[in-house]
Image (cartoon, rainbow, N blue to C red; front, side, top):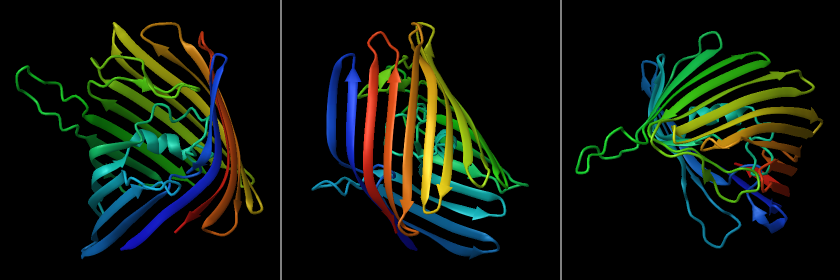
Length: 321
C-alpha cells in the first residue's frame, strides 16, 4: 500500500469584471494542482490477475478547517483482459481535455478547454482494454441511482452516463478522443468572468459532449491541441458550447515554459452565439524531482452584450509525496 499526495499553495489574485464593475480577491490557493492525499495498493492474485484500489481526497491546507471531498475512489481487477474499476473515477472526456492542457489543469483563467468536462463520474464502472500496438479503448458507465417508477412516474434513467474513450500513443505522438452522453441532463457553462455556471439548456434531452486532442513532442518543445463541444436541451431551450485550444510546453534547463491560447463560443436557448477567448502563460522551476516553484497568469473574456473578463495571477510552490 502506498500513501501519496500533493501540497500546493500559491499567492493568487483573482479579478472578475462584468461590464465596468470589477471584483478582486487575493489569498492563498492550490493553483498548479489540487492539494490532496490518497492511499493506493495492489494484491497479486496469481495467474496474471491482480486486485487494486485507490482512495483519494482533496484538502485545503490554507484553511483552519478542511473538508475531505472524494476526488476519486475505486476498486478493481487487472489482468491480460485489461482492467475493470468500480467507483468514483475521472471521466473519459476529462481524460482528453486534461491531457492536452500545457499548464496541467491549473486553477487559472484563460483555459477554455475544460469548460464542457464533467471531470469525474460517480457510481462508475470503467473497462479499459490492454494496449494493442499503442491503441487502447475505455468504456465507462455511470449510474445516477435515481429511483424509477413511483407516482408520479419517474423514467428515462435521468443522470445515467455512457462514455467511450480511445487513445493512441506511439513515440512522440499521442492522440485521444472521447464521447459522453448523460441522460436527461442540462448544460451549464461558466463563461469567462462569470462567478458561477449558468444553465444554457433545460434537462428534457440528453447532454452530449465530444472531445479530441493530440500532442507531438519535438524534444525542444511539445505541441498540443484539443477541440471540445457539448450540447443539451429540447428545441424550446437548447444550449451548446464549443472550444478550440492550442498549447506549447518547452523545457529550458530546470525551467519549463508553458502557454495556451483558446477560443470558442456558446449559445443559450437559440440566442445569438457569444464568442470567447483566453490565454495562459506559466513557468515551472524544478527545485527537485518532487518540488516545483511556479508562476502563472491567465485571462479569459467573452463578447456578450455585457462583456465579462477574468484575470488571474499566481506564484507558489507545489510538493508531491
